[in-house]
Length: 223
Image (tube, rainbow, N blue to C red; front, side, top):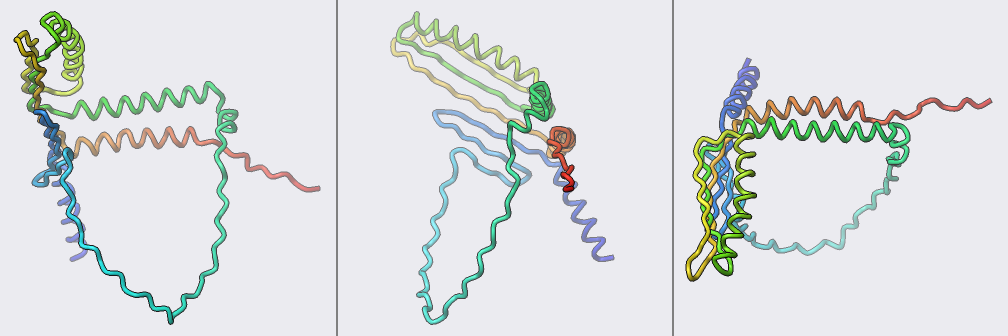
């Protein structure tokens, strides 16, 4: 009974962990800072924290009196080499193209499912674009807007954005200077990640089994 209670306790703990959120915190102000927080644990990804140098251990002098017995070398097992040309001959060009299409569709579906579960709590961006003169600043401002706003529209269609503040402007001052600041706070539930992984994982497994080449096992009979 005690073992059963321990197993149930572990399962309950794992279930409670799946209810937590994974928070992604990104901030840029002349330097990029990126961190991930899960429950009460925060991991700083960029810039990485400097690792503490461990003191070097002194090497013990080797005992030359004892001789180690040499173990007999094991012969490496010969593995069947994978020949891509044999695979192409078996599946055919159309079969290979079909597999590539299905893999691409699977990857795109997995990313779409994953991004649809993301909620952006805050998205703020401030850019002041500067050129060599006022005309150059206006041209660069137009080029930036033509790329930035369509990209933000695509992001807003894929993920849920609750609060956003976008401010882009040209710098027409006497001493123009490009300035960029931004902050992103996003979250996704661990249970949502597991659901996507399981769903797409089974699809990937079926695809691998179907794409696996079939070897001819018929042996020639000696007369």
